[in-house]
Structure formats: C-alpha cells, structure tokens
Image (cartoon, rainbow, N blue to C red; front, side, top):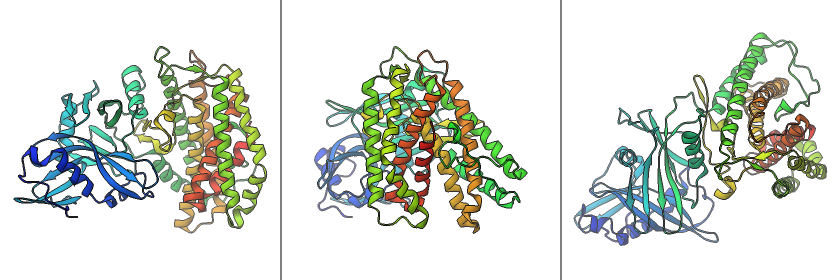
Length: 543
C-alpha cells in the first residue's frame, strides 16, 4: 500500500523520519486489514474506522529505524483499543519480510515492516533489557528491567513461537523467550505480576523464571509491554501431549477384546465427562498400562498445582497476595455471576432450532432443570462458614497452559480469562476454580482425542466411549487425590476441611466452567456441544 503523500524528505535523518507528524501520517496510512489477519488481534469482527498514533519511542535512530509504537485502533460503535505494534522503517527492501507500507521519499523509496519480524530489532529489545534503562516517548516512557534470572544467550539465534496465542513470543538461543503483549491494557498485568512474585518471593520452580520486562508509563497510567522469561525445554503443551497419548490409548482400546462395562460412579475425582461408567475391571494390557502411566502424570500435575496454590498464598504481608477470608459479599458476587452464566447459556441453548437427534433429549432435559442448576449454585454459601480463604489463582487453568517437560510440568500464562478486565483477572477467589478448570480439561481432552481417533481411523465413537470415560475418571481422580493433601496444611485454609463441602463447592465451579464451555461451543463448534452438556450433567451429580 503506497502512502498518500511523501513522508520523508531526507532518509536517515531522525528529525524528518521519526518526528511525530510524519509517524502519525504513516500510522494512519497503514491498512487495517493487516491487524485482522493477526492471531493476536482480538477484535476482528469490529469495523475499524481508523488508526491513530497514541505514543512512540525511537529504539534506534539510524536506518533502519526501530520504533516502539502504540497504535490506537478506532471502531464504529465501540471504544478504541491500543495495540503495541513495533515498527521498522527502512530505505531499502528486506526480501524475507512483507512490508506493511511502501513509502515515497524525496530521494527514493522506503518501507515499513513489523518490527518483531526482524531479528535485529528483537536483539535490540533484548539488549535494552540486558542494560536496564528508560526510553523517553512523546508523552510517556518505556522502562526496561532485568531480574537475577537473566542470562545472556551465547547464540544470537532468534526464533518465533508457532503457538497459537494472543501475544507474540520471540525465542533467543533457546535460553530466553520474550512474550510481547499486543493489546496494551492500562493497569497491572497479572501474568507479569504473578511471574515476578513467584520468581522473586517464593521457591516455586515449576514456572519459567521471570528474567526481565518492558513497561510503559504514561502521565496517569502504566501497562506491561513485554515480559522476558527463561526458556524451558519442553515437549509442547500438555494438551497436545495428552492428545498424542490418547491416540495410542484409543488404538490399544480398539484392539481389546474386552468391553468396558457400565457401573455407577459419582466420586469427586471423576472430573468432568460422564462419570456413570467406571474403569473396566479387566482391560487389555496395553490400554491399561497407558491409562496407568497417564494417571501417574496427572498425579504429578496435581502435586505441582497444589504447590502453586500454596506458593500464591505464602505472603500474608503483601496485600496483593495475602490470603483473605471469604465473606458473604464474596459469595454473593460469585453466586450472581455464575447464575448469570447459567441464564445466558441455557437461554442460548433454548433458542437453537435443532441440536441433532443425539443431543436433542439432553438439551431439552438441561433446559427443564434450569431451576435445579440455579439452586445448586447456592452451595457456595458453605464457603463463608468454613473459614476458607480466597487467594490469587491462575484464573484460566487447563492443559494448554502447562508445558510437558522431560521431568514433569511447567505452568504458563497467568493472564487469566482474556475476555475479563485486568481488575477482574487480579481478583482473589477459591483455588478450586483452578482445579475445576483442569478437571474439565481432562474431559475435553478425552473427547477431543476420541473425535480425532474415530474420524482418522474410521472407528465408531460409541464403542470407545466407555474407555474415554474410564481414562478421564482415572486422570481426574489421580490429579485431585494428589492436589488435596498439598493444600491441607497452609497457615490460612484455602480449601474446605470437610471433603463433603469441598466436593459440593468444586461441583459448582465445574458447573460454571461447563456452562462457559457451552456458550463457546454454541458459537464456535456446535458439533462439540456434547462435551459441555455432559459436563453440566456430571457437575450436578457431585455433592
């Protein structure tokens, strides 16, 4: 896209290239379609009416210019948002990069590139963190810091993470990884805040240690721009690792001559999917071995999750992390929120014209029982009388937020649910919400793995459903059995001492999570509605 008028009169001169007027014109000339095509851009459905320069700083004044730009995206009918879009401005083309904009200058041409796509730009950011300083912007300042966990990579190799995410991650020599927060939100970023706390104030080791950060400070607000962490060698996230395991498990189960029988089971460890079938008493050896092996790994993750919550509750003098007694006002707020989720989810389900024959009966039954779900949420009231405390939690805990390492697991991404405000994501709550998230994730993995196996192998899902339920139940029970003892001996109780109350409270958070999933699947994957519908049923069977 060519600019509407020449922007540079003398390429290479800071006064003419990086002045606010010229850069503001450049930003206004960028094609909004570029943003829509990016995984990290969260408002793809909103009509963009314009792009404006919010603030900027010059990271490098000579060509190619490196600019830290904050761009305000304006929409029709909704509030503007600010995104961090680092820019590289050059008087020559870089064949390996796609230009965002082609410029006309008095002495030739110029090009604008996405800064994070260029290795030299990324290394310039790392250099600034390695040598902490401030960089003045037009109206604010960018602050670069490092922690004792910083290590200078021996290799200048720069790679970009291929993971689907709302941020952009740059890997330096498999030693450090720079996570760039694209959407700039004013306030304390919980991912940076919790990572800093766990790295510098606790001995919890199952996270990537925080090595540095970039923050922006304006006249009346601040925001996280980037966080640098130690790179943790891994086998991918635990969701993908689990799906690979399940492919082998279902292949073994499909070869088994024995059929998993149905038997009642409503134990708290059943996790999420239909718990009405227990593990088969005599499974084919390969399937049984695989299920036992994964259950041992789920147990390990349960221990680590408990240790995480203990660490997050370990600073009684720090107001941002001190455990706080759960009071009636907390419970009332949580109950109102969950009830609203139920009303919204079941209302959307009721408005669907058809679910298909397999789901019609289940959906109709759920809608008829709405009053039962609303009544169940009231079981949260037991938290106030139990002298249980709320703490800072992960907030969006599932298998995709955990790396599988050679010797265990590493927990990532403490940002919380992305659709919530920063203030909401920093609120303290019962850690059982995190537990419910992971148990629901085991159910999702079992079913997603079954869908994939049946489609790829041409196998009937129904024949393997009992195996899926047996696997999920065993994983969930193993996780919970390891988790609960870890959190029993904190100075301030963070889970109910009564197993009955713990089960009932956990079932409410499982219900809330399943209803959240229901809303998602209604809008994105109707063919997966079966998973949250089963989750709602199971949550009602617990407690």
